[in-house]
Length: 285
Image (cartoon, rainbow, N blue to C red; front, side, top):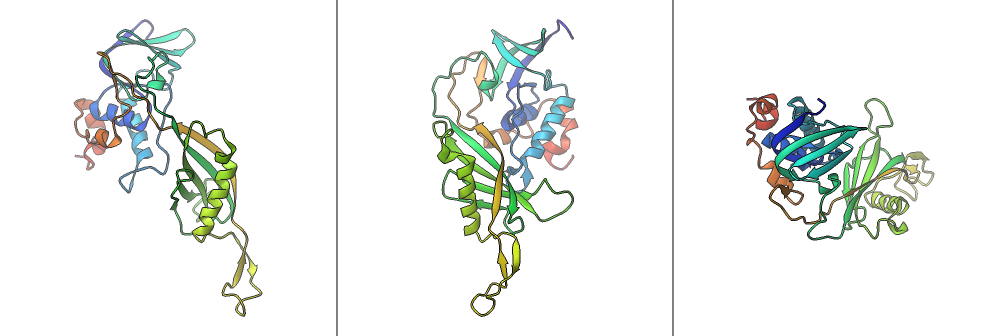
């Protein structure tokens, strides 16, 4: 509605998991320029998909009218006790607030510099298509280094239907100064992943019978070398600078996920609580 000014007591700013969970549990409106969903391998505990929860919260907040700008925000700026959110050419949404709960300061264009800077660390996900060595029993491997810390194997999206062929994703944690160095490039990630797979006993595709079996070898078949090729790289900052709270702004970027999840069940928005009852109490009551 052109010229309309929204008014809310508290507003959440951010598009990550903690921001979405907090907005949902507390029944607060949320604004963001960019969604920042968790990765497909992340879970709450050992089983519950964090990405599925995130998508549920996004949907329920939207259905409850608590995403006033939807996915259209192109810029977010603070002017005293108002947010001015550009949603397109000559289109601005104005929201008055009493308190702003900021989970991702970088989503606000005119945010004041942080009170304390920290060295930036990035979570780097390198996705690989596996060309040889797609069939094995491993879903996850871990190393003792922050470079190629985790390797997740998952059913390949490149193949339709039910199958047991896997592609993989490697997770590394790299400082800003190292991010552009060749020693931390997808090429070097590939070499370390191949080494990790080999050490785990993963082999390439079968390549005929072994002529040395059983006289001088206990392997009845020959195998090709494992072969993987880089598909894409995703980079996301995981370290947070420290911002100083003001009368109107409370910075939540250092609040732990555990603290946020402990707020479950505190929602005072009755419509939202009813709409998402199964998500709040876990049993649909």
